[in-house]
Length: 220
Ligand code: SAM
Image (tube, rainbow, N blue to C red; front, side):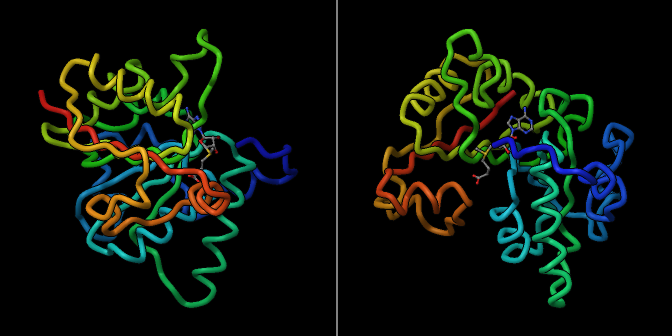
């Protein structure tokens, strides 16, 4: 998702109390960024943030960070967040950052993050762009630099080609093991428990696209 350049987006992000500025300076100190010291889960490629805002409401015992590389998209998430807070709902356990996920190992110390969510990641259909896919072996290697032993990545998509690629990448990547997968999440009761819909999931499932999901675990 890339929205047209929105004037003022950069300023709004720089001034927002919900956005962590200079996140690399928090490396090794993320527990202090939140009001409560508790496990941290991140969504890489958050888009407009619906999934994480719902998760943060449902799971106050978890701290969440939404990572989005485009300021025009992050601005949409901020606007939505402001409405929620104006309505009197505090989301102290949710922060955002505007960075490219390639920088994750420069931002988090190993073991600082307990789970990574990837939802409807960009497919990058050209073979020469495979390294940019957020489930590529290159990205899995970055995730293994910040996750502790036993942590998981959860990935949802309606793109069957990207999903099959991702299953292969998990199988080919050192330390990674597939825990569960389905090509039709919404008809797989055991994997649907606690499912929180993302913006794209709502959009694609409403036109009949089956949703695929995999959970992969990382072991040292
Ligand atoms: N996760 C949301 C959902 O399911 O509704 C949004 C999905 S949208 C297709 C993918 C988002 O990932 C886009 O907003 C894009 O800018 C972001 N993205 C893609 N590559 C990224 C990267 N390397 N680092 C951070 N964000 C990225």
